[in-house]
Image 1 (cartoon, rainbow, N blue to C red):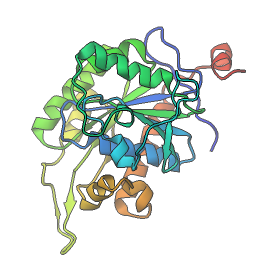
Image 2 (image 1 turned 90 degrees about the horizontal axis):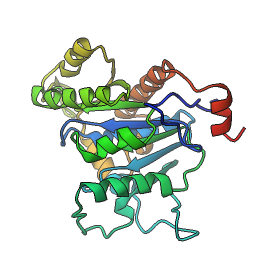
Image 3 (image 1 turned 30 degrees about the vertical axis):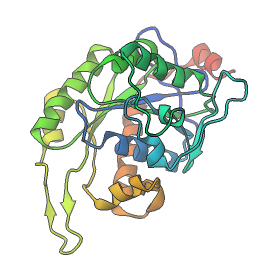
Image 4 (image 1 turned 120 degrees about the horizontal axis):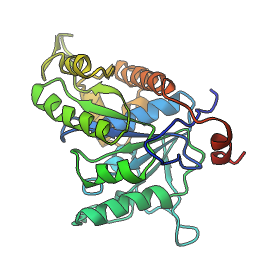
Length: 282
């Protein structure tokens, strides 16, 4: 697959020289499976032949290392920068790789946002087509810093179908709009559960929440993901389902969602001419 072009970002910011596109994955509330979605989407993008990285920006509750099966400390060849760790074909960095697993990060907002920007800027990322940033839930300091200092090509909002989740997802969507980060689409997680014994499909968290948001705000639904025990089990085991069971229906749902994401990104303005050449060392 050809390399992905850099796309326009918010305000006067410019894409990083070695990261062509940053995609932020956010949610208005916790418990909707945002991190699981971000990690599996990253692996699905890598399965499309792209060079992909994952930045765990949830400073207070980092879960990406566990989901990717990463442990130990990343290398620092010069004492200033950090080598990303690799798992399942993607690069990754998280505060969870730099502190003890049981140590809480009891930091005020400025410390957390500083840690997030340092993780981004001090990591020696390879030449990435996409860096997926797993944001903490909500609309707080880290999201504001992301909007002001980090060049983002687009955002994805994760929700479940139930009304209480879409209520908060609307806030996340409007936040991205206010800070001029384009929302590429919605991902409806835990949309349907199919009984493994009898095959009965049931919408445990309601039905159609993302579709109603899509109609109200004119933002596409990129994908509808199942509520399946294998997704949870594989994430806990450090082998996300897209990598561990690539032929499964759940993995296919993530890949379809990743392809829809790329299609929406392709509609965004691309950087051309001298700007692109300078960014890519041409």
